[in-house]
Length: 83
Image (cartoon, rainbow, N blue to C red):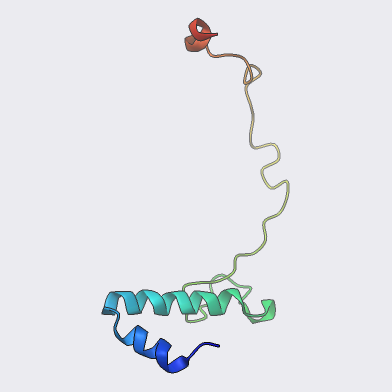
Protein backbone atom coordinates (compact mmCIF):
# COMPACT_ATOMS: atom_id res chain seq x y z
CA UNK A 1 0.00 0.00 0.00
CA UNK A 2 1.18 3.51 -0.78
CA UNK A 3 2.39 5.68 2.06
CA UNK A 4 0.89 9.18 1.59
CA UNK A 5 3.51 10.75 3.86
CA UNK A 6 6.36 9.29 1.81
CA UNK A 7 4.73 10.45 -1.42
CA UNK A 8 4.34 13.99 -0.04
CA UNK A 9 7.98 14.01 1.08
CA UNK A 10 9.17 12.80 -2.32
CA UNK A 11 7.12 15.47 -4.09
CA UNK A 12 8.48 18.17 -1.78
CA UNK A 13 12.06 17.26 -2.80
CA UNK A 14 11.31 17.82 -6.51
CA UNK A 15 12.19 21.15 -8.15
CA UNK A 16 9.24 23.50 -8.64
CA UNK A 17 8.91 22.90 -12.44
CA UNK A 18 8.68 19.16 -11.79
CA UNK A 19 6.06 19.76 -9.09
CA UNK A 20 3.99 21.83 -11.54
CA UNK A 21 4.27 19.09 -14.16
CA UNK A 22 3.18 16.52 -11.59
CA UNK A 23 0.18 18.70 -10.67
CA UNK A 24 -0.82 18.88 -14.34
CA UNK A 25 -0.50 15.09 -14.61
CA UNK A 26 -2.69 14.58 -11.53
CA UNK A 27 -5.36 16.89 -12.98
CA UNK A 28 -5.24 15.03 -16.30
CA UNK A 29 -5.61 11.67 -14.54
CA UNK A 30 -8.58 12.94 -12.55
CA UNK A 31 -10.27 14.06 -15.77
CA UNK A 32 -9.45 10.83 -17.60
CA UNK A 33 -10.76 8.55 -14.87
CA UNK A 34 -13.84 10.60 -13.94
CA UNK A 35 -17.28 9.32 -14.96
CA UNK A 36 -18.36 10.41 -18.44
CA UNK A 37 -21.27 12.44 -17.00
CA UNK A 38 -18.79 14.76 -15.27
CA UNK A 39 -17.37 16.07 -18.56
CA UNK A 40 -18.67 19.24 -20.17
CA UNK A 41 -20.38 18.61 -23.51
CA UNK A 42 -19.92 22.18 -24.71
CA UNK A 43 -16.30 22.82 -25.75
CA UNK A 44 -16.73 26.52 -24.95
CA UNK A 45 -17.56 25.84 -21.31
CA UNK A 46 -14.54 25.89 -19.04
CA UNK A 47 -14.20 23.29 -16.29
CA UNK A 48 -11.15 24.94 -14.75
CA UNK A 49 -8.81 22.48 -16.43
CA UNK A 50 -7.21 22.49 -19.84
CA UNK A 51 -8.05 18.79 -20.26
CA UNK A 52 -11.53 18.12 -21.64
CA UNK A 53 -12.90 15.09 -23.40
CA UNK A 54 -13.60 15.72 -27.07
CA UNK A 55 -16.89 14.87 -28.68
CA UNK A 56 -16.76 11.58 -30.59
CA UNK A 57 -16.09 11.86 -34.31
CA UNK A 58 -18.69 10.83 -36.84
CA UNK A 59 -17.99 8.34 -39.61
CA UNK A 60 -18.35 9.69 -43.13
CA UNK A 61 -17.77 13.32 -42.25
CA UNK A 62 -15.21 13.61 -45.10
CA UNK A 63 -17.33 11.72 -47.66
CA UNK A 64 -17.03 13.36 -51.08
CA UNK A 65 -14.31 15.76 -49.92
CA UNK A 66 -11.28 13.55 -50.46
CA UNK A 67 -10.09 12.06 -53.73
CA UNK A 68 -7.32 9.70 -54.75
CA UNK A 69 -5.53 9.67 -58.10
CA UNK A 70 -6.30 6.75 -60.41
CA UNK A 71 -2.60 5.81 -60.58
CA UNK A 72 -2.06 5.95 -56.81
CA UNK A 73 -0.81 2.33 -56.59
CA UNK A 74 1.39 2.54 -59.68
CA UNK A 75 5.18 2.60 -59.24
CA UNK A 76 6.79 6.03 -59.30
CA UNK A 77 8.78 7.03 -62.38
CA UNK A 78 11.83 7.78 -60.23
CA UNK A 79 11.87 4.23 -58.82
CA UNK A 80 11.68 2.30 -62.11
CA UNK A 81 15.49 1.88 -62.16
CA UNK A 82 15.35 0.01 -58.85
CA UNK A 83 12.57 -2.42 -59.76
